[in-house]
Image (tube, rainbow, N blue to C red; front, side, top):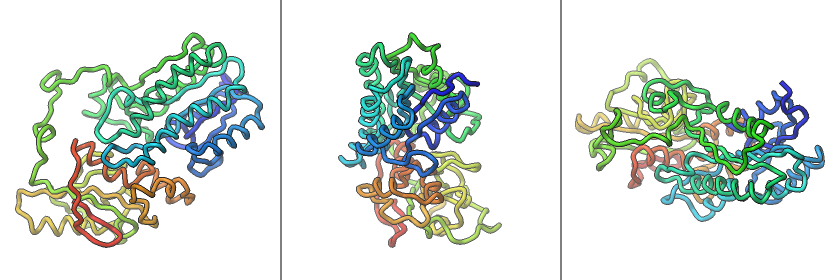
Length: 397
């Protein structure tokens, strides 16, 4: 298929997830694809929050090809909420999510070919929210607004549209039960759902479409949800105070917390009162859901760690009506500053070890934020945080 033969497509954040799928589909259709991503690989490596990085990247693209046909602004901004997000982190999210798309459009403006198109990847969060997502939501709202502004400023030269994805599983997991049924489309989305629309919007078939935002979310934002209607039910525990007999501990750390001990047969025998919330996706777990605390706890590729011993031991000394919940994030070999909300972003951005980046990718490239937000969003509240363990690995309740 040579629909885009010899066309030049630029994709930000194109080394993983939705961006990688978009890049692959363009290549299959015959395009030359220029990717910029902070993850190491066979592409231009750089942090698009940096003005000079953007300028050098644009110079390289134009120097090599002379023009650009399509610009896809896909790079993922930081997601942190009002409780934890610093001024600098919020600015960083805006730089990645809004300023970089604007500046790349400006840098490439004199070099867009006839029939050129820009596609900005927004989010269904540009119109709806979960708690503690302000930096990401503001960035996605900003790029959606930037879209219609650019479409008018570049009228007659470049068509500009945006896409707002809903729940897109980048691992192509096929969900069953409530996760699928709740979607009017009957399933969770995958990256091809977005990539197909990107290529359509860049094609001549979309020649009369500009300034539009297209929401691809399986219909989730179109359905009304009220307690007691059409099978929807809000459990009282979700709307009221947390269960005082469910003790939840947030655990974080490095190699020790990930676990050094092999998992043996007796370790798989776990009480129904000992639970673990999945902080990554895996064959035996789904991000953000509680599961029986069968090891490993932090990730499917970890070992038996201290959080496992801590939970089992504590359970022996509490009343029978108390449950123990563990939310664990561990990154082997990382500096402990990866869990410092005021210092971790530039350190993570500079990380160049492939195996470390594999772990960071499982945590959305921000292990500290994953630890806090995954529990906050599911519980609908903020925590009191009291140290329950000392040392470089920690456990917070």
